[in-house]
Image 1 (cartoon, rainbow, N blue to C red):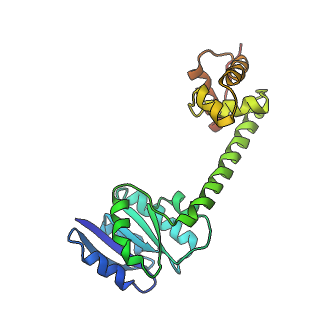
Image 2 (image 1 turned 180 degrees about the vertical axis):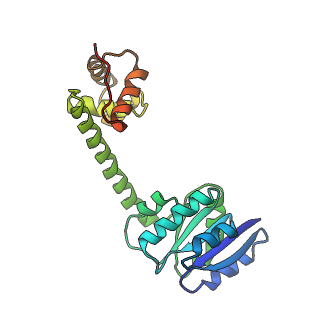
Image 3 (image 1 turned 180 degrees about the horizontal axis):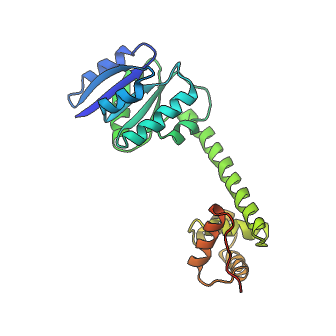
Length: 227
């Protein structure tokens, strides 16, 4: 039996309630969103939370989701939101939500399937948000490479830009063939770059180089091996 808790500052959507009540394996309760919502949610201990975020400050939404995910790690949080423009949902994903659904006229026709899908560990979001989300992820990926490249410089590890790109992918555990495809280079060219990278470190074996590259990314004042 899925225990569903529906919380909102706005009016509840009757068609959503009716659709859920038709399901024999779903039980729905209602909690008005107030300053005590986090404590009330923990006491209710639902398996599914329908969280209507309309009229709630972004920072408050983030804090509530993060808190509930810490206190109720098994809960699946489905966000209900007013129809959105092509805006990023990354902040919601980072907070730990499990699906996003727009409050459109026919929401009742797919609310049950969304609940079941989220309960199975899958993620659903409006298709128009996917492209902006992928773009933002690409920007974050580029930013992470820039940080990695700067950390190499800080440790006086002199790699060319291309060698740094190869090293960045190496530290993710990718094989030479996969790196070649990502950078649109031949595998032979990648091997040459990898050999150049090895020469910059006084350690042997790819695994050890990868471990060091990852330490460089996250640790400060790291003592590098010397020849």
